[in-house]
Image (cartoon, rainbow, N blue to C red):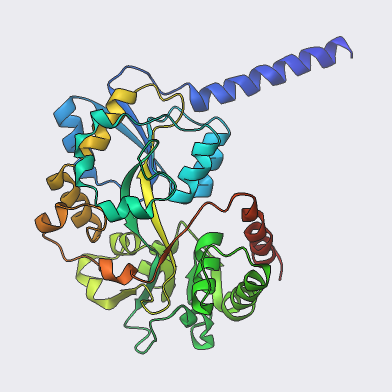
Amino acid sequence: MSKVCRITGVLALAMTLFAIGMVTGCKKNDGKTLYLYNWTYYTPDSVIEKFQEKYGVKVVYDDYASNEDMYAKLKAGGSGYDIVIPSGDYVSIMKSQGMLEKIDLTQIPNVRYIKPDTLTKATYDRTMEYSVPYYMGAAGIAVNREKVSEFEESWSIFARKDLAGRMSMMDDMREVLGDALAWLGYSVNTTDEAQLEEAFRVVNDLWKPNLVKFDAEGFAKSFASGEFWVVQGYAESVYAEVPAEMHDKIAFFIPKAEGGPMYIDSMCIPKGARNKELAHQFINFILEPAIYAEFLDTFGFPATIHSEAGALQTVTPYYGADDLVNCELKEDLGANLELYNKVWQKIRFTE
């Protein structure tokens, strides 16, 4: 190797290390700043402000649109975060890969408010060794009542050709394929290749031709602007983008008869977090009944995991806990996740 090549290689390595440092090392470890990595529209500003005031600290909030985005960033070394809030299947993955710190429950007395049936469902970590439940819910369908006056509360709405060019579904393979599997009467966690092939045909042949795109980030804004009339997504995202005086023009539903994928998002401390004590304080703070009720009211959530906060709510939720009765928690599929990846790649990247 020539001297020039060696120098070029050293410079390239230096630039790479500098870039990694900018991602992982720029978060100041002063013990007074909590670095929170969470979903968009998922922690109220008012709650963050109360936490900052109570503990005399600062919270820095970065957001993500999918578990896959969050996982990829942390896996690539983009940490420096003190709390991250993955869904249960990703808690399982990250736990098995040594990406999470153990939780010290003695620092979180408010876990006593978590409903026992929530932990029964949380098969990925029932003893809260690495995670503490944050919220249990499901994505659903938002419909613009002014543009679509008649509809069935079913995933099959995406097969309606009269709505072609006015609909979107999320860019999330477990959600979209899970909807198709639920509509077909199958488990959202199936590893039966024949059932996955059926789900592929439903999404690819019946639904995809009517969609503008698969979109996990901008669907709420597109719905609010009137560009899309029907979107698959999260209620809190849609209602946050639509002015309050227009909320009565929205129909939001989770197909009750068919069910679909359900999630339990949980608060976790990434491996190597530098402010673990502050992270534990934040988790405990969130679970205070009045604070958790404020969280629920901000996003129009029902009290699915908390035993006391529901009685303190002042806002009617956008959907009820009973709407989740036929929904099924997404599980860590291990090596079988590749079956879903293959199907999803065919849907997303072939005509």
